[in-house]
Length: 81
Image 1 (cartoon, rainbow, N blue to C red):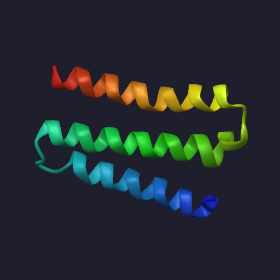
Image 2 (cartoon, rainbow, N blue to C red):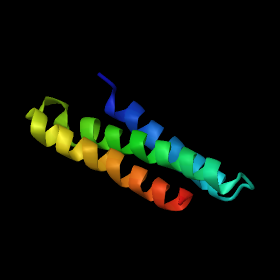
Image 3 (cartoon, rainbow, N blue to C red):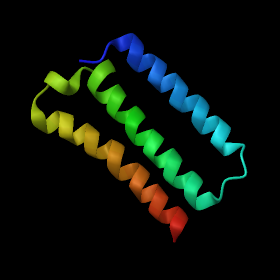
């Protein structure tokens, strides 16, 4: 199991990386993909580590994890279309 402090460091690093990417000259398609992946990882960390839903009933955990995956995918799809 990941330590809560290690997870917090991962969240901060992913936020800093996303900020740096937003200010770079990376093409919008690549940027959208990288930020979407970052949001997915951050959401999974928050759901499992900080909300401690890794030990919750399966339906509640999957409900929140599906939200973390579906919303960024929908937004990325909108950007690509």
